[in-house]
Length: 266
Image 1 (spheres, rainbow, N blue to C red):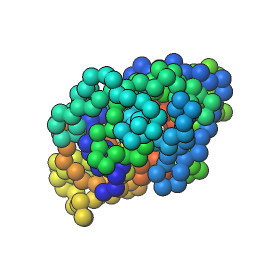
Image 2 (image 1 turned 45 degrees about the vertical axis):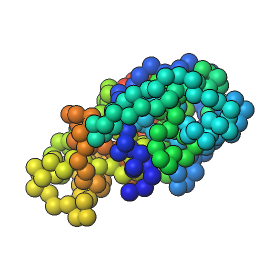
Image 3 (image 1 turned 180 degrees about the horizontal axis):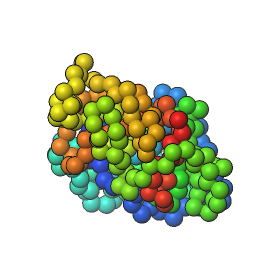
Image 4 (image 1 turned 90 degrees about the vertical axis):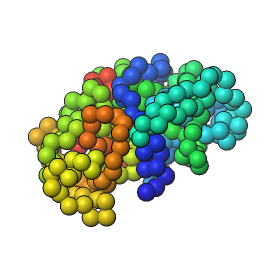
């Protein structure tokens, strides 16, 4: 299990369509992603920082304490409490950065929390609340992430095209070989995973704690096959598992936050 997977298993999912911060951007802007870590370059108060986008993250911005020290930012807010996927209560200090730039998109007065992982997950990561007004096109096949601002009229031309799947809470119903599953979308998961009781219920055999569904249908379109790790977790309740990076690596995905949907290219 890699660092991203470990990070995911420690995070509790919150709804991924909260209200975000105001941003300044006239046209869609595209940033390059590193091949292995899927990081992009951002500017915080005049300093270059390597970040990645975690669809399951709670805060708009999470930075390591070492990165905050380099930026000269001291956490000043009270401890922020939340639950992890195993039902444990965690707490992290809070801070704010005056200006965050990603490509041509500028975000001001961005709230954040200190990364609580040991070791930290790189320099930091962005949560979906920062992008609440945007459409985000993740093209991991080409190594790019495109931010489409709310003023953009032709979002299809900007890359938000494909099969549309309603996802008002960042959750979608999927038809698989194991039956219908309620799954959470999460770019912070290194792989997709599913609760063990659902696999047992389907009388499927896990090999090395992994299963494969040949069919993975969303809105009638088959995007399979897809592999899952079999894992038991307690939070959030009511879901069967997570759609992780092994799906995003194969498909171009547009996260349409204003439309509360996800648009997928085969």
